[in-house]
Length: 268
Image (cartoon, rainbow, N blue to C red; front, side, top):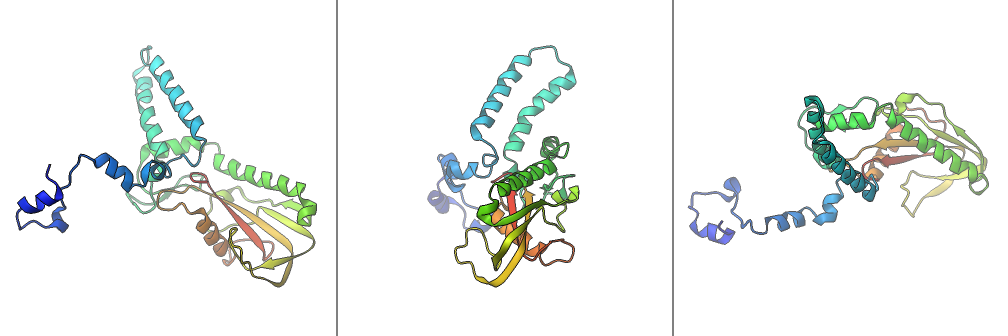
């Protein structure tokens, strides 16, 4: 293989670097590619490493691999053996799903999986089947409901510190978890006195502008999402959803002041 300098001396003058590309030495291809992708940590950043306890995932995969080897030689039907052979491929596709299913790479029409807030950006049957099995029996809804209940318990324990008189869990439609064109509050806090409010800001902002506006109610909304390689900034996502759902005419908010909590199941 010729290096770039040698290729430039021997390659005909009618070649075009823009059209044909350049010849490079492939001896260090593996190392160069890993560095270009941000190193090992940068690569693992866009797997399900963020969404799971990494030791548990590896332990489960290794345990299942040994189990797979032990039953490989047993008497199995052709359908059972075919299904067993598909499992490693499903593991790989699921683990790398944030990189495979990307928002900026359209293989086909964008499709939302039923009863979830997951958007598929291409025809990837293996990944689609895995996600449907993972989030079966309304798991997406149950995750969001469990987060709301945990928040209610925390607020009940901090009534005096937060000057909260009552914590009220709102009754919402079950489609709220995966209906993206409108929203409503999950929790409503009633103040023991009156709270001073500020203009909309992010959690990490240190320069909140607090004016003379007060409020006796404060709503809390919880939004789940599943990010990918191109779209995983949950802070910007929560800000955009807050501004959208507080200005449209379809969303129902019990007061003018509130907070939107965004949770990314793949990156948080």
